[in-house]
Amino acid sequence: MRTIFARNVDEAIQKGVYLLNETGMPISPRGMPTLEVPCPVATVYSHPMECVCFHPGRKINPFFHFFEALWILGGREDVDYVAQFNPNMRQFSDNGKVFHAPYGYRLRQHFGFDQLNQAICILKEDPDTRQVVLSIWDPKVDLGMRTKDLPCNDMIMLKVRDNKLYMRVCCRSNDMIWGAYGANAVQFSFIMEYIANGAGYGIGTYTQISDSFHVYTENTQGSKQKENWEKLCEYNGKEILSPYEATGDEQVFHDRLFAPGNKEQFDAELDVFLAITANKLPITKNSLQLPFFSYCAVPMYELWTYWKIYNNGGISSAYEEFTKAHPWPNTIRSNDWIARSLQWVKERENNA
Image 1 (cartoon, rainbow, N blue to C red):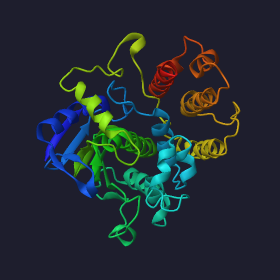
Image 2 (cartoon, one colour; image 1 turned 60 degrees about the vertical axis):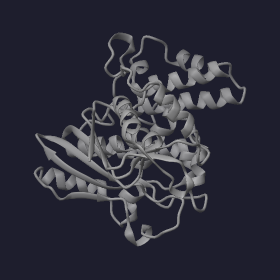
Image 3 (tube, rainbow, N blue to C red; image 1 turned 180 degrees about the vertical axis):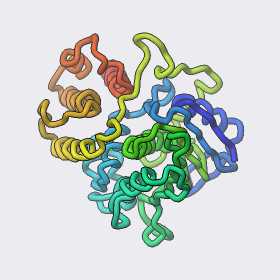
Image 4 (spheres, rainbow, N blue to C red; image 1 turned 135 degrees about the vertical axis):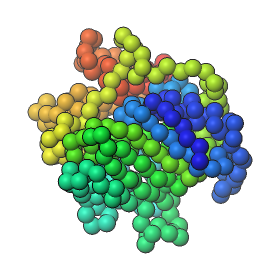
């Protein structure tokens, strides 16, 4: 077992690239050239809520990561919702309508009860328990199944110590770029915070245990893995300062999902938000009251809408339209998700 200790996903990427360059062995599962660490790898995040990737060598789509995480918390399985932010997701559905093993649906509906709510109740009643284990893998429908969407992350273990929630996620197969330090870091930090806030605890460490920790060295499934890996290798060994650790105007902060005691309101507003954005309806100021939605989720969707209009030739600049609506100075510009999304939009407009 190799262990990567990191403050956040930016630091984890740096250490993961180094580890793969030092120890990675070439394999070729299903004919896809791959580098794999020859033993399981545990990544331990000391600040798991700092899940937005700002690493200059990794060009994430922050809109997809953000809205997919909310879709997971909503317990959904539909392809159309996430495909509006990442059309490439359609290729992972067997029928084009739903996914075989969407994490949120598995955790909240698939087994006939809501595992997240059950975990919150148990952790409230017995903070010392070691028996809260959530299942994503279902051997009845996954073992031996031929599907485009076999779950990579399979089990979540939770415990409370020193009034903080600690989470360990077990993963059978973890692509470092697209999985471990891409979508997974966001997906499970959202789940962790949801449970911690719902049960009234602070945030401890989040550990992701990857049985197969790897990276694809050639392009597969319509993605640019080769280019991403080569770009990350250019930064191998260099010091990267995350905006979470910066000072002044360069610093960004995490906007919590909800305060302890507001879980029911968050659940209700999440349902409203997902319904509105699934149907591309206008969001009124009175639709959502929690700061997370008002100052993070709604502006994110507004920026995404500007970007889509810009791509269709409707406006001159999505970046300018958004900054007109939210002029500086405004704390919304220091929110980690808004900051990364503005950076993403500006980069693409400059390239265009």
